[in-house]
Length: 232
Picture (cartoon, rainbow, N blue to C red):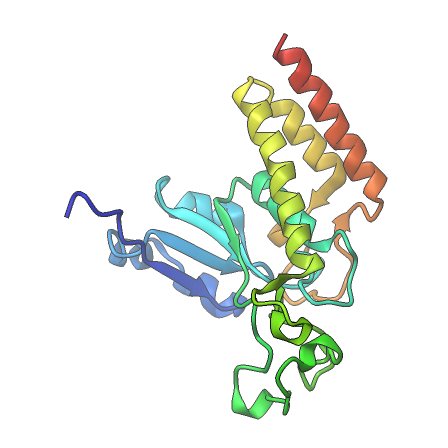
């Protein structure tokens, strides 16, 4: 009824570029018109230009985890700036959201890919996948091992928060009529990502964003100064 918030329906598209792009036609979108209002695309195959062209303006368009050069990795043993990039990617390509498939995957999801992990083992044995991935699907740790009756946020979750705080600078600049300044700052730090970074199936090449935290923070200081000037 009208007093309740709308029920949203989301579709996550798997990273199978040839199959997905062939199926993602106007007829396909029209068939789900009114049924699906949130489209979540694998970062490894996300093509923002195509999403904006084929989906309704009011449909939410987003990406989920992938690999460089399309998006920064979400596992433990990677660059400390990695997950800060996700909100910047969303801003640069006018996407509405990003998503990670799980934040408490203390064991693998499938039986054939499952390790025998004991409770709280993620604290001292980060390799929770047979393929060597460390901390995949874990952004929150169980507090019981530390005798703490609440989840404990990981550094990676705090990276996401930092990127979201950066995003607020961009949003405020746009509200002050300085969208070009925000866009230029983002492009200076994060040159390209998603489908602009490389054709599909080029996983493993380095992502085109700065690895120097001073570059990121200098951009933020510049935005802060611009906001101060706009508020005078």
